[in-house]
Image 1 (cartoon, one colour):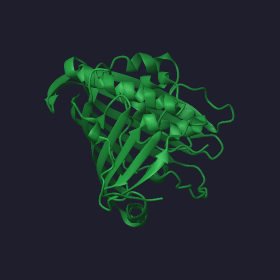
Image 2 (cartoon, helix red, strand yellow):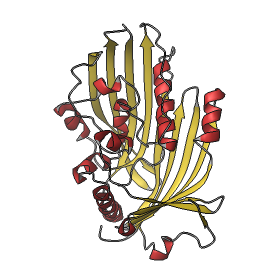
Image 3 (cartoon, helix red, strand yellow):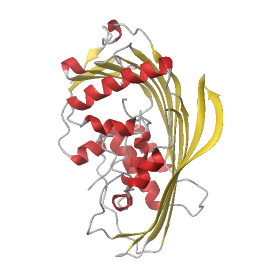
Length: 340
């Protein structure tokens, strides 16, 4: 079953009170070893029923694959996405060309669709009985460092999340070590931040209901922890490496507050095993599919230098507060031309 990277890159999720509208600004950086770096600055405005996201995206590719990715899939530019739940429609805008198209909000019909859409985050599932992957070692820990500092006016505390897995492919003899190290800085949910988060959750629950996802899945998005599903999304081995059991929940419960910075590095080491010809990956799904393909290739190659990450991602919360957005914000500019 194909698993593509959760859209950590472009947003990592919509998460939404009945108190006020919300303005949220974030910065995102994702780097693929040997392929390039994707950056995005996002500004979100939302109410309990509508959300507008404007993004300034830039991709700097490396090599042939990276340059082709930047030309056809990870295009730099300014885009907008407006989700209107009462209409069950999504408006996608190209600000440079002053064009827009409209797509219906459709229900997700399968577990795989949910994973590719960025929901579900299967971190607590049983291993496939027919899996060729033998888990040799699996460790998951969360450490409260006790460090604190102010980041973008948010009083923040630091946690370190470590996820280490050693495995062997019993058919090919290939062995691998995957190590995800993530610094997570969080800020207490109090005052205006609490109100903003409540409004964000209200929108998200309504949106998830509209696409047929159980609202309980929201639990994983509260702390922005869906990046952990990357382990189960970026490679074939991931299907046997997903963490399970109470240890995961117990460790994650150590993290308190709302994420201000998520700074992750993914190290992949591969050795042994026969070389196998890879089938071409379906690049469907636009940016999601392409990013997933790049991540899989980066992890497949691994690294001779154990200190060089195959994949890195960084998200930073710049602003997050209640604000009277106004309904006139949720309109396609009158001079934009409809496409399709």
